[in-house]
Image (cartoon, rainbow over the protein chains, first blue to last red):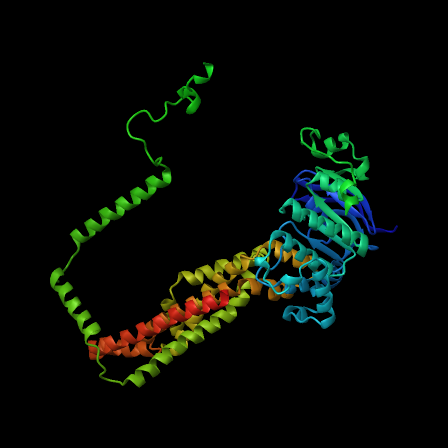
Length: 267
Length: 286
């Protein structure tokens, strides 16, 4: 397996005092589904946003696909690299007034010249590809519906479709199921797992739900106070590790941890 | 039984005896409440003192009121053409309307770009704040004053009116537009940036479609304002149109009958504009 993404001594400081990430080191292989867990404010979102430079890290190296993301200065090069990185969000972040189809096609904007993209001109191949992805996510009937008429789970699937239409190498998911009910959460996580196994796209997902992380991921990275405190297989995560990540006992968190992979195997 | 023990005041209200003396107040008197009451009181006193100490200079209040009402009667119940025909009046109305359309259009086009630069989510903080501050200063001076200021260099007339009214429209619409743009969730912009979309792509594909409704309604509101101002400009700045005829009727011919006709015509146009704005808003929302 080849390494797709590598963090080398990455730190991020806001202002003079607030440290969001300090000396983060880890690497992600191609085709892995990696969960990043940790308490709120631990730096999970900052970490994901450093990868596609929505936030600029203060120091260190982020090697993605052989290139150091932090060394890219030209707008054009940054746009080109960002097309390779899809991202989905807790709040979906769709343009609510536009249709599902238009929102999904937005994923192609990074490939276009400023003018063509601004006018919203897409070629037939792109449209066909978008329809295919929309169908594979089970949104056939919603193609021309406006996004403000969709349910949360449907909106998140539109978000996934927008990311997939980019033909990304890696998909970043920033707490994708935090505002969804258990059923929709399962649908979304199943889709992410499916994307990972069948399309071979690497998935990095921030999660608050430890049980979901244990069931779905190939690897777990635990973050606390901006530092990586666990990096390993879900099966090897001990009570001691959980205590280090969340700062309290698993019993106090009232966690009912099933045997890892039990749910994932059912899919 | 032990269970029937009643909870004393210590448990219910932190030691203070609860609502025991006198009537129960609905509101607690806060600083804001006191400030509002004081303001109302001062305004009431000032009004009474003002009326009591006016220098009426021989004008009898009741008599003056009666003749004003008599003038209103002439204007509203006996409208009649004298110096021009209905067709000419409509032509003049079109001139006034055109002044409103032209100044709104100029204002809207320039304000669209300034609004983007002034919106905090599309621009940086320094640029945004400096444009917003500049525009606030322009807006603080009334439109009529801007027209008179420009009249110094352009001379009284339509040129000064167009420049002055556009000037104020730009600042008004810049504020309105930038606030509409800012309503778009920062996350959506972030998501498109993450896709590799450029600034203009984000503006055209996300910001404009999201704020189109409010842009259109703000523009129409400004058009209604500009129509009213251009009536006034006809008189005050000699910009022509129906306002100028009204000014002539009231100040030179003293023909209240014809003034009545003009008033009704303006009223009809204003109501039509209102009706249209409601229609447009409904259509865009759907």
